[in-house]
Length: 494
Image (cartoon, rainbow, N blue to C red; front, side):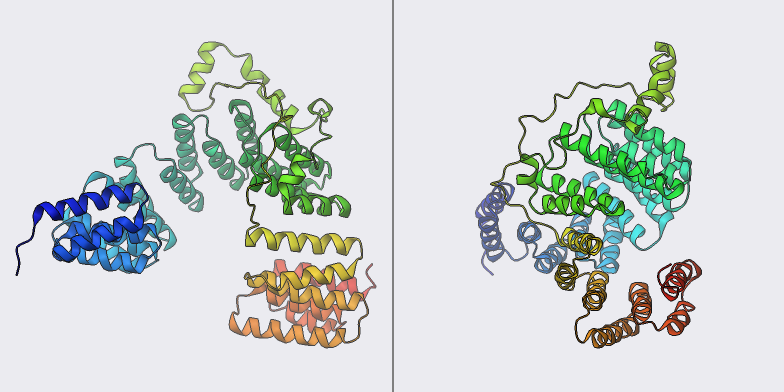
């Protein structure tokens, strides 16, 4: 066997690493392959090739190269970590756990160990092993203190375990480490709302609104969420007006990207649909489809004047609720800061977005989930307007969805639109759709969406006894809503 030229081998590997870190992946891979050809027992050469494959999304090739690196150095824990990371990326959890166990046994460097425990925490969480997830996340946190993603995961697990005090402790740590980041406030808001402590949950939104220098979209969406939760309890329609006001305020004072503007228009469309304002719903949906053009022309937010806000709006309530903090002494504020209950505000006036525009040259792509949501809301809006031909159009669009529940809704809506238009063959369409729902249920007995829509087909075709019978197979909270629909239909909609 010819002697390996170590100088040349080192040159290939070094150049491959430089090319990789500079994004020249093909050159990096070619150099790695030349190193492998020169010495097929060189673990670093396989490592270089594997790293390139990971960056290019060629995960199976990466696993193959990492495995060869392990074979070259079976006593190196870092090699096993890299193999486990690639296996976890393609959801080969059992294999990844074996590789990580070997890495832990052999020992590995601190950075790799931190990443490994983080990944193990994620894997444990996915497998429902929440106690193990917390243990591994805490191990990772010891090696990488103050990692926000780790803390978010810990807080989420405490939420699942209904351990609100521990979750709030993590949230307060997040606020201390990153006081300009909304993440800590958001974690606290979610936990408190989950615990039914709505007044305290509201205060977290107020603290964030007071302390943060800007108005992040996540905070805006949580403020809207709070109003919708309030509406569910009080049925006070002013909640919708306040929720719309927050979105307008965000659009007016912040600098949204095209994606964020589209999301704002979609959220506003949902709200307008719930108050049965079809025209504004449709206008906002068109804004969601063309967010740059719509935002630059002031759609939806241009008439908003902060001075016109209802004096009872959440924005003014926040200021009122926080007034008492402003009256506290320096010593009292310091004591509150030390106990993680309050953080000093650091705000500045926002001059508004008079000159800000979203570039219309940048490509904007509507995500599949947003596309489904747009089609679903269009169906609702045109149903309100009794424009059933357009309802049918968007029903057919919804049927193209990769989300089975959305496609199922499209089937039902098409049949319903045919009935509303009194088109020939609408009864046959209902029969066809019911068979589709039955087959979907046979395939997946947990598909409650298919079962619910099948019952609605029976209601629409006045097969009330069969509809009631099928209701009896569902849990009580689902039964009650559908039985109410059956009774209402039987009584002529009264």
